[in-house]
Image (tube, rainbow, N blue to C red):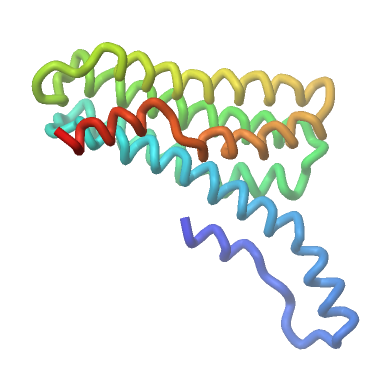
Amino acid sequence: MTLLVLNVTVQTGLGHKDFLEALRSVGPKVLAYMVSFSVIAVYWIGHHNQYFWIKHTDRTFLWINVFFLMAIAFIPFSTSLIAAYPQEVLAILIYGANAMAAGILLLLHWNYAAGRGKLVPGHIDAHLATVTQRRITLGIVFYAVATGLSFLSPKLSVALLVLLPLFYMRSSEIDRFLKGQHSE
């Protein structure tokens, strides 16, 4: 995640006035960095929370995880596109598809581990499984809607895409499950 900042550079050897202008011109890249970092953080926290219950692994699960990480590693590129071309529908579509792919793979990761893969020891609370699926699915749907809006209003689409990480920063029912598990 920290490597994302490498895309934010200011030319060296500038005079004061040119330096200030160059600094202002990196504003969209700084915003893109912040959004990208936040999006990756949301996925990292979701991934991390899943491992509270996942205690085993198998080859299928590892490949799901590898493809999830591939989608995550692509986020800096798709974010740089949307930062450079915020009015271009194709840039928004690429970013949205990337975010949705990461969400779909995180959902597949959870569903496989908690279901068919049997990588969660014992019986997992059905309500927890549903809450986790619903929370991930909500993000996927939100990204789909926000991305689709790019055909009508690229500005609105980008604004919604920027706001989504804020939703996931708040505490959720999953956090209460985690606290309950720790207190037993």
